Amino acid sequence: AQSVAQPEDQVNVAEGNPLTVKCTYSVSGNPYLFWYVQYPNRGLQFLLKYITGDNLVKGSYGFEAEFNKSQTSFHLKKPSALVSDSALYFCAVRDSRGSYIPTFGRGTSLIVHP
Amino acid sequence: DGGITQSPKYLFRKEGQNVTLSCEQNLNHDAMYWYRQDPGQGLRLIYYSQIVNDFQKGDIAEGYSVSREKKESFPLTVTSAQKNPTAFYLCASSIGSAGYTGELFFGEGSRLTVL
Image (cartoon, rainbow over all chains, first blue to last red; front, top):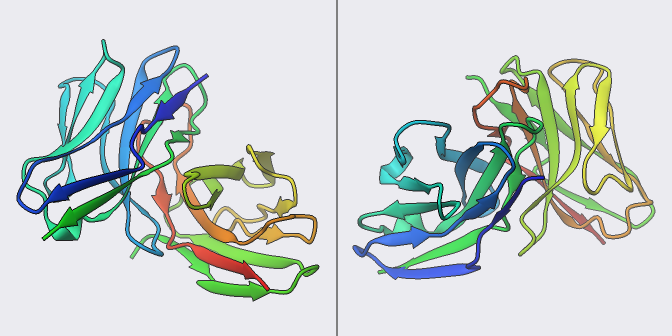
């Protein structure tokens, strides 16, 4: 079975400060990990993914994520937050041994204050 | 441009009525999905389809029905049996094969409100 957890419902950060949105996962095989962003009343947009290779993955809009196998985590990061980064962020996981259907976390609302 | 089109964007329904949400994709993807989104509950899978004329129930299929008569289209019907249908509905697609390691592509969503 595969599962993913986003332990924070909301993250608040000041503009210009670094941000981190947390994600942990559980799979029986190797994980395929994804981050998506959703703006109000819109669909989800893909940000980045980890399949294999370098543990630090770079994606769209200056976001990056670090895969940590020992901690089963895939935290989303950005060195300097923008007000326009305020949105809902979803982590998703697929198990390499499972089906192609991903499991999504509950989402974390990121609020960047001016 | 390639993408997924959902319609209508907003829909109001009276209790006891069935409604159908449209989802069309021109990405030539095999797999299509329907998710329901409620505040604080993330995305819950309703139905998915890997090929034409075949579909599978997801985690919350009760009160919903789908069809997959064409590769490009995967409409969702919210029936009167769905007890709490007010939600934001998202359609997605992907290549869908077991070896696929890419992301899902989402439509812009349909917001259904039951009056």
